[in-house]
Amino acid sequence: MRDLPTGPSLLALARDVLLNDLMRLLPEEARLDARLVANSMAIAEREAETAGGLGEAIARELANLYDCREKGEKAEDLLRCFAHDLRVGAFKNSEPQERMARQILWQLTTSKLHQANPRFLAANGFDWPCLEIEQCLNPGFRK
Image: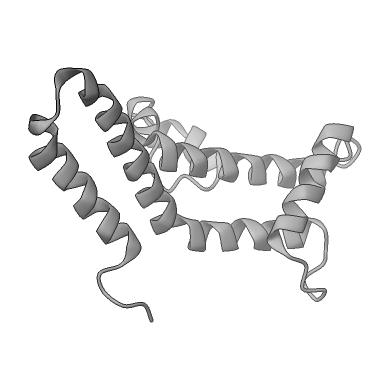
């Protein structure tokens, strides 16, 4: 259990103070930089809020892909191995593995978009969480 307020809550508070209290005190030429700082804080807040659960889900999927549930492989090592295998085309000859690899890539991509640019997902009709390719591409989920 973490102490309150949480890291994401502190980031949200600091961003709010920057945008609503401090921004008007800054000279015009510094306001763009302040907005960039505020946007970076928002990204960090979303990453902190979503990183654990989705990161664990992707790590489980990678462990299933590599059939290493019992070995206790680290998620970073699995991601590194996954990136290498994608570069060398290791999944081309196995339809089930290729499908699984595409699913993992989709989860990683939508997760990163949700953290860095959630408006892009919304503007293009994708609901969050959008963890399954079929779910996201289903016309019923599109606006």
